Structures are given as structure tokens and as C-alpha cells.
Length: 303
Image 1 (cartoon, rainbow, N blue to C red):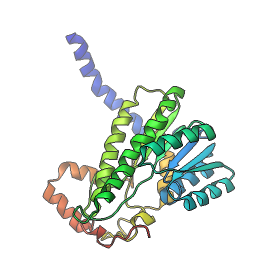
Image 2 (spheres, rainbow, N blue to C red):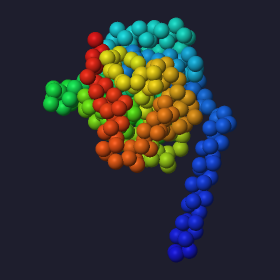
Image 3 (tube, rainbow, N blue to C red):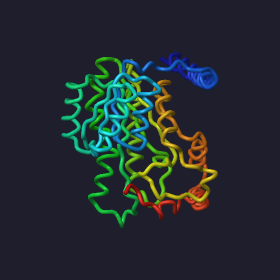
Image 4 (tube, rainbow, N blue to C red):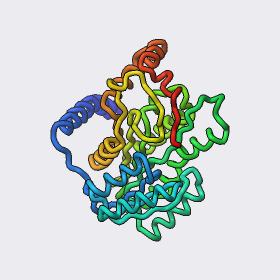
């Protein structure tokens, strides 16, 4: 038994070195991309913002078989559905509040009966209220947790079992860098995204022994959509907001490359490293210097 443990201990650093070298080679050589032509893709919050761009990207550039949109606003869902159909891709929409467990399970059953099995689930739906804890309405706080966090529990439970049966599936989470580095004025959003990140990290590890089923978590910096309208940072030329079409393109590429975690832009890796090594006082000064400490003071959100 001792020799067995000794062998495993000596082999471990070799395995780590191999995986690091393999990852470095994949950065240089073009990876083999997943063919999406047989995939049915469901995007929550698919009527507008990043969700709409994700639907376009999966359909137009990547050739997904069918696109299914979930959301709460029928007007937006209908407009996006018509746009996707104009591209020549079959598209359907269902009105669904992912924060409502019963509604999720009911609409998931309707999707399977009308469209077929979902092989790529994109959890994109989210809300933000942009207020401090003491200024937030209790119902608003609950709403953000139900949609941003618990909604992923319900959608994943609804579609993952069939993916495991088919040995074919991918769970995608559009998260936020605020899951790793919170800011004042968005306490509901930051909390829900941190919970969502833990959910996806646990799920990703849990799928290691499930052939054909994988997960991708995307953590983008501030993206220029209506959702965070009015948000301002101190140095916009140094830290420009991401374009939603860029986030959508990189997300789909990450799915095709089976990338578990994606930080956008790459400079956000520096933030993670600094948060790991700097004392809290230094981190607070970085927040003040960059303007993230007060960036929500001008927040307006969707109108």
C-alpha cells in the first residue's frame, strides 16, 4: 500500500506538467471544434441583450440545428425568433420565468414534446437592481436570487438527466467577473453570481465521470447592454466595456472547444491573481482608483 501511494505521489507532478504543456499547445494549435449541426440549443433570457446575440451566433455562424428561446417578454422573444428564422434556422420561443420552478419543469416538458431533446443549455437569464442592501426591496432581492441562481438549478435538473442518457450535452452559464470581485451597489447581483459560480464549479467537477456531457462557465467584464445602462468606470479607454456580440462569439467558441472556464477579457486573470495575493487594504485602494467603488452611482438599468 505504501508503494502504491508513493507511486501516485511521484506520478502526480508529471501529470500536472503534461496537462500544462497540453494546454499551452492548444493555445498555439487550432483545436478541433465541436460540430453543432445536430444540436438543439436552448438560451434562457434569449429575447434581448447577450441572449439574442448568443442565439444569432449559434444559428448564423455555427450552424446549430434548432434554437429555442426562453424569456419573460414575448415581444422580444418573438422578434428574435423571427430574426433567427430569417437566417434559415428553425427557432421556437416559450415564455418562461426561470425563477419559477414549476414553470421551468412545465415548459421543459413542452420543449421536449414540441422540439425534441436539448443538447446545449445556455443559462443566460439574469436581473440586477443596482441598489445597496439597505435600499433594496426584499422582494427584489429574492427575485434576483431566484432568477440568477436558483433558476440554474431548475433548468439544469430539467434537461441534464436526458443529456446523461444520451451521453451528449453541454451546460453553459453566462456568469460575470463580479462573481469573483464584487462591487458596492449591486449586492444582489454579486451575491447571486458568486453562488452561480460555485454551482457551476461543483457541477463541472461532478460531470468528470459523465462521458459526452460537459460544462462551460463564462465570466465577462462589464458588457455594453441595457442591463447595466448608466454604469460608469473611471478609465473607460483602458477598460472598455465588452461588446455583447464579442461575448457571444467567445462563449460559443468555448463550448465548441469544451473550455470549462472563460474569463473575458484575458486581463481579468490579473485581477484574480491580485485578489489572491494582495491584502484587503490594497484591494480597496484598487477599487477606489479604478472607479469600481462608485461605478454603480450612475446606474439606471433597463428602462
